[in-house]
Length: 102
Image (tube, rainbow, N blue to C red; front, side, top):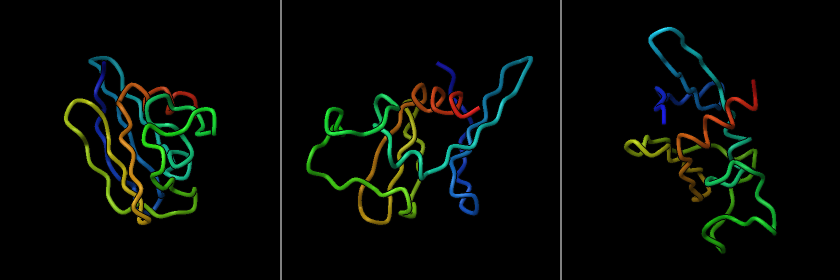
């Protein structure tokens, strides 16, 4: 698994992911409004058939602002929204989401 360089683009309300190899580099912006609607373990839209891993916890709305972003070791990125909800997206899921946006 390739671990990207991660930064919080507050002005663009996005997560910036940069992937580097010896011969190439790629950069992706993933909007937090999109991440708010996705299941963190699969990258698929959250639905009643595919609820979050913690039923009963609040789900962020796509318009909700992000309060905190933190890299979680070599596993993924944690995103906390102002309303109190949070999700941890594994790096492999983030890469798939980013590639789907390209």
